[in-house]
Image (cartoon, rainbow over all chains, first blue to last red; front, top):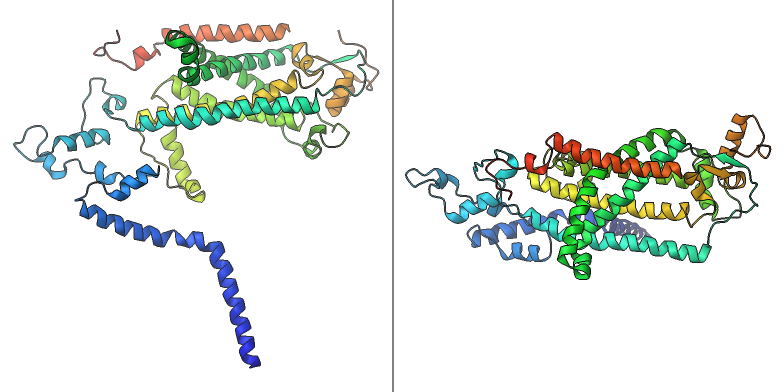
Length: 413
Length: 41
């Protein structure tokens, strides 16, 4: 009896372990069996329709799931194409010709002699259009409005970050003239690029109902000229800012303290910081990395079809196994030139929305959010009390270079 | 503030330079994306 009960206990433990394992790993194993069933059912259904569309395809399309289009894409005539004595199409039918055009498999000759002109039907454009008008505009718009809303709430709750100590009247040079010039070259062009980009995306939705088609058309044309040409100023500013400040933005141990105290929000002390604190480093690297990404996709758009980015990028991602890691199918690596442009536009806008949200927060903290912050980029001179409060280690470095202890400096000119 | 305005002016000058420069170099969409058989007007 006791042996039996021990055996039952062991069995119970093993069963429990198997149950836990099955629950944890179930999703991993479940996929293959039903998928095989689905494939078998699909093959049967396909046979029943004579190789044409099945109910399964229609249901998947209605659910917004990917549909294997090969039953259509491959039905372009086959051997009938070369059947002798039957005219230019051979034995292929008109629907087969149109399918070949739609799936970019027809032997097309065009006078422009380029890959772009050879694509006569491009249904990926509809997906691009729907994504651009739908999720991109919706989530992008809410991201910006949400950021502005959060900053207003923060301002109402926290108020302006003021100086704890009275101003000393002595100033230190925070940014040299060339640093400020580079910053404003980048900032000025980014703000205009942001506004013209938003006008381009939201013109039809927002400007047309408010001001009419004529006004929207004029705004779009002006936006296009500004956006396309000011891009070069942005890229130059980005390079200058990177070269000027990269050395000061390399993460170090002071950032850990800064983040631990959330830049002074947690606790009463202001965490010590060098020339740039942890938050500013986040801004810097966001601007550099996202700005570079926007620039690359932007250049790809500025010179259409000359610099395709995505087929190669997708191939690299597939090779690394990243899509499979997050449960996605492999990414397409055979993209029509137009699809390359569509993806570049979406990527350009998505990254730009994220950077705009970050920059709105940056503009807030550099202007109304913090007393004395604008002086750093305005005149370049900041009060020593401000420097001591927000960048104490940097102030010590500056003073050490000048050979004077903090508090003994003479006012800067 | 002088550096700020200089930055803004430089951005505008670069944009104008890019506009004329790219047209001179033949990078306009009309020149790169269309052939003599395409009617633009």
